[in-house]
Amino acid sequence: MTGLDEILDALRVPVVGAPMAGAAGGRLASAISAGGGLGLVGVGNTATVEQVRSECEIAARSGERFGAGLMCWSLPQNPALLDVVLEFEPVLLSLSFGDPRPYLPKVRETGAAVVAQVGTRTEALDALDAGVDGLVVRGSEGGGHGRGVVSTLPLLQQILDLTDRPVLVGGGVATARGLAAVLAAGAAAGWVGTPFAACEESLFRPELKEAVIEADTDQTVYTRAFDIAQRFDWPTIYGGRALANAFTDEWAERTDALETAVTEDFTARMKQARVDADVSLAPVYAGESAGLVDRPRTAAEVLAAFEPFREHLRSAQRWL
Image (cartoon, rainbow, N blue to C red; front, side, top):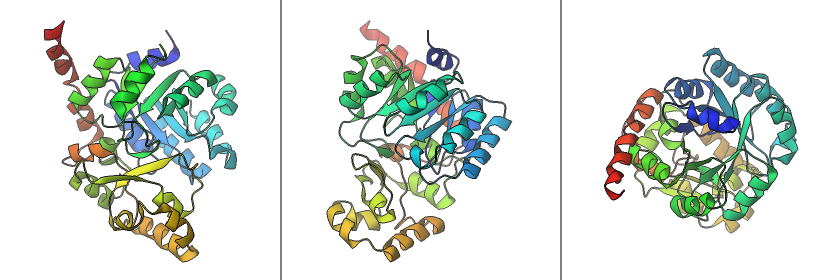
């Protein structure tokens, strides 16, 4: 049994909160852990040391175990972010969107388990070769950044045949039925983002939470347009799934044209839209499961709604 196995076995509800930058702060992470799952603090590419320390302090103050997620592609720009996170002794780190190898020795010294989000078989093989303790299979229907190539169930089946290390699953896991489905297939836990993004404890502004609640399953779009507009240096293999809005209506399928259309004023307007929570222009990162989020809830209420997963697993026993 690995350290990751022990972490997952200790959960009352086999759910890990995805480390959503801009949504998953210390309050949400600690609430998920208190509710029987495991919460993670999201560390985005624009995060500062002071912001990360503040959110980790909030999570640590609760006395609950928690973890954090960092982006390997942007860590070289501010390596102190990892140092700050490790000061608070997280039990689990997600090192994704790039090569985790340079950071594993430092993390191993702390005893934290490490997972990496993958969206293709090739990414999974590379992460396993790097030596991570487990994988997060994130299908194309998932919210936020990732690969937009393969949907959750085909990818999960493919990855489970590659490894006996724990595999967590994100992308469409938003109800007890969805959780039961991936557990029955062989997953170790769900990796849940969108339902928590709309929670009371989320860092999302009220306007963004309401937009998630009002959205249907067919009202998201996968695109690089928001990153191009904000001049973020995300690797081009990663887009992001967000709620469709007036901006994506115009630019989601025209990213080549957007590359040349972006000006400093354009970028400033996009960044101001985020400050103003203008959901017609700013990104609201959420997955297709937004259509399954129908009302404001606390993290504890979201976790309680997952608890009947055992009943759904039992219903499959008729075939045994």
